[in-house]
Image 1 (tube, rainbow, N blue to C red):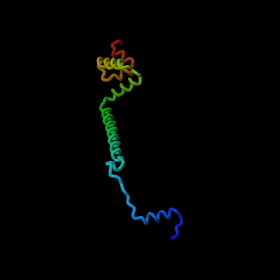
Image 2 (image 1 turned 135 degrees about the horizontal axis):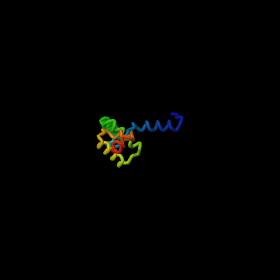
Image 3 (image 1 turned 90 degrees about the vertical axis):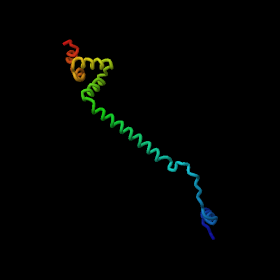
Image 4 (image 1 turned 45 degrees about the horizontal axis):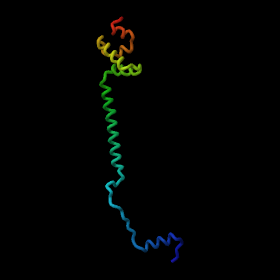
Length: 116
């Protein structure tokens, strides 16, 4: 019998020794590397984020648009909490529904103060 290379000779020697058996270690409990559990956690976190955004959006829809405008304008004008509180108090005492009109009109502030 003539063999062409050393690897051919080794293959023939291993094949003559008998069948090859594969021994696997005992199962460690994590058979797929934990990727399924990780994906489940990821989906859970994603669902919580989507739910939070949805609940917040629904809460924003229930707020009066004038109030949302007042908040946006007071942020844009960089009013302090004290200034915002005084605008709300002037609006309530003069019978205006929303303090957004006071931010938009200097004459409305004078009228609310009673100095006009």
